[in-house]
Length: 410
Image 1 (cartoon, helix red, strand yellow):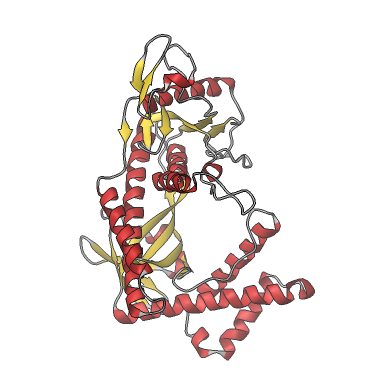
Image 2 (image 1 turned 60 degrees about the vertical axis):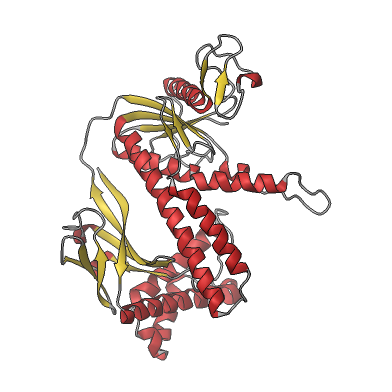
């Protein structure tokens, strides 16, 4: 089975290479914004499209040396991105395309055939980028970079708060293997981001709370600086680095947990949560102001920090590799229903962590009890044989041959 996966490697460019990377990202961003403005002004009148604007890029390269000095492929990919953005807009899948901004959209893409890779030591390799040269690259996949060059479809170079990185979209051949026989239900929460029906509870790494405090201090320091000053830029850089560190920690935890679950279970049941609705602001309007706005905003931050949506996505494609299925079930009363006798009542949930059934006196951790109910509903849903949908969060999308997810309306 062939699948397309992304692999990210951290780069260590020289000062001259950093300038070249920034220059290529800047020219790519300029071309994108020029093509966007051209369509916004003349698009309907002249019926501009990808083929017409591709000729415009050739004219730009002929007239401006600083544009011609950068790789043409990156500019063609920028035009492809713009075409896709307009297609999504006209299909009402996205908002109107916005201009790209410096420090936010510092990225560009090359075709895989233009990229070369060579290994120089046990921990380091080099990647060749057209018009820039060989850039040192940290081999973070345990020496598996050998033979990667032949399977690269695209290479995207992107700058974040931690520096430059390259992301390879590679074609992987997944060997056929027996689907695991295990079945598990998963409850996603705030105090305990992941709780399973087998009794395991996964929490965020220990350093997250400490770094959260450092992020708040960095944000306060940034608010006291004058915008546009060097001290403000320094404080903003520290704030961005701390945020990037938190993202990496959370992503690592979610990847590790989802991989362990996918390797040991052929059926995984989760709740069909409407995360965008759950994290909507409670501010209200001037005529009808909201209530408990600060408390609701804190809850929203906690939900988003737990990575519920990312975890479901990771589970979906990792189960697909091993032939498993991900089932999303109706979340109603999963935390109030007894997993032993089925009695449902608000009084059963004594506290955030304690569940005690008023009928059979069954006691358990509230999240684990909910996970058991989720698993039971998932098994029943599978037996009923509902139509597979690529939908782990309650947003019904078109069926796909490679889909491994079942869903039921919440």
